[in-house]
Each structure stands twice: as structure tokens, then as C-alpha cells.
Length: 316
Image (cartoon, rainbow, N blue to C red; front, side):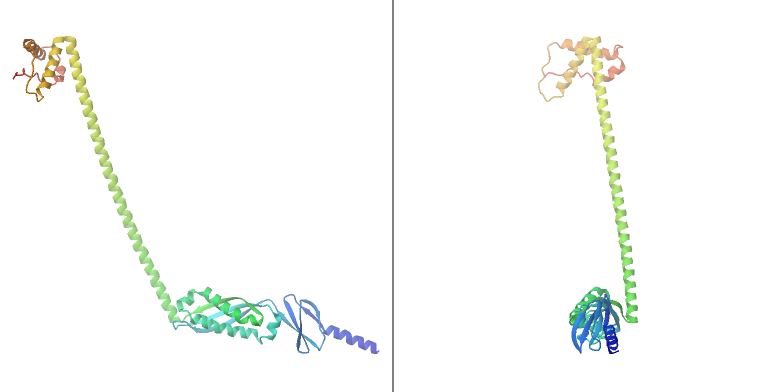
């Protein structure tokens, strides 16, 4: 009978000493009020009524910092709240170094958030969320390291200025947008005027180039026409001379002689040597006159002979 009672007592004590630690937890075991060990996840057994186990959650947790009013550097009161994400890295420190970690982290975050934003102006605090988050995380990380907690990140939820300041900001934003619209419109008009002037300039240049090209083409055409006319006249003279040479050799010689006289008469010489047979020259000149008066030479031939037959030169 006594053995049965003892066996029942042992079974009861064994059952009372069973502790199951979850995978995301660790257990801090105390024996008679003194730290004994840290129990790992799984099955653990402690001595009932002598040992005591406190389980610590090692997962990432969040501390919600309640809204509070903070004065910025330029004396504007803004309402700020934030959240702090943390996880336990040392269960023993978390149990023995801080009484209420949640309350301590909340007060610590509020105090340091007030200090961080107090060093910034309103505009800086509204546009520097990442800077505020980083500075606050560094401060909380150093302060909570002795509590066995690691600060993962800090996020500002909102920064709300007073209603009158918000309205003034809205008016300022509206005025800035209207200013940008006016500037863009003026810039567009200026660019359009520049493009229009550039088009007029380019059109004038093209028109002037076209006129110059037309003038060059007209001059080239006139030049070609004059060249062709001169070539035609020269060819006509050659034809006349050939006809004269074929029909009357003496007349051809007389014509060539007259041309020679004209060339000599156009010079600056003061003395001219004449051939001795002046009677032959005179008779040739008379024959030329008869040619122009007779029917042997056509009107086209007469027109092609350059100049009139000059009178006989005077010998000095």
C-alpha cells in the first residue's frame, strides 16, 4: 500500500515538472529564486515546487508609440506617433534587466522622438522621415542593448501640423503650382517665338539663295547665248570667206588685205609701210565694192563681212 502511494506521488511530481517550450520560445529556469539555466525549445523537466520556468517569446514584436505633440525647431507644434519593431536576443537579460520592456520602450521612444524632431524645422521634419527613422533607431538600439533586445526598425506613422499651418501650406503649394504654370506658359511662348523667328529666318535664307541661283542661271544662259552667237558669227564669216575663196580668189585676197589694214590702223604706230602695187590694191578694193553691189554675194554674206572697207591709208 505504501509503495503504491509512493509511486503515485512520483508520477504526480513527474507530471507537474513537465514543461514544453515552443520553437519560438526560450525558458529561463530558476531554482529557489536563483537563475539555473536557459531551457531550449522542446521537452524540459523541472523539479516541481523548487524550480520555476519563465518562457520568453523570441519572435519579432512591435511597440506602438501613442500620438504626442512635439515642438519643432521653428516652434511649430506637430502631432507625431511611431511604431518600434524589436526582437529578443537574450532571454536572461530581458527577464532580469528590465521590469516592463513594453512600457520602457514606449517611454524611451517618445522621449527620443521629441528630441530628434526638436532639432528639425517643420519642412525638414515633413521631408526627412528616413533621417528621423534612422536616428531614432540608432538611439533606441544603444539604449535597449542591455535589455537583451535588438531594435529592428522604427517607422513614423504620421506627422500632422496644426490646422492653420496645414491651410497655409496648402495655399503655398497652390501658389507654387500656379507660379510653375505661369513660368511654363511663358517658356512655351518664348520657345514658340524663337521657333517662328527661326522659321522666318530660314525661309528668307532659302528665298535669297533661290534668287541668287536664278540670277546665276540667267547669267549662265546669257553667257552661253553670247558664246553661241559669237561662234555663229565667226562661222558665218568663215563661210563667207570660203565662198569668196571658191568663187573669186582675187576678191578673197582683197578682203584679207582689208582686214590687215584695219588691224594696222588700230595700232599706235606712227609709220606705216605700204606695198608698192597700190594700183592692184585699188583695183581689188573696187572689185570688193562691185561684189557688194553685184549679185554674186547674197545679203547674208554681206552682213557677215566685218566692218566696211576702209579708205586707203595716208603714208606719212
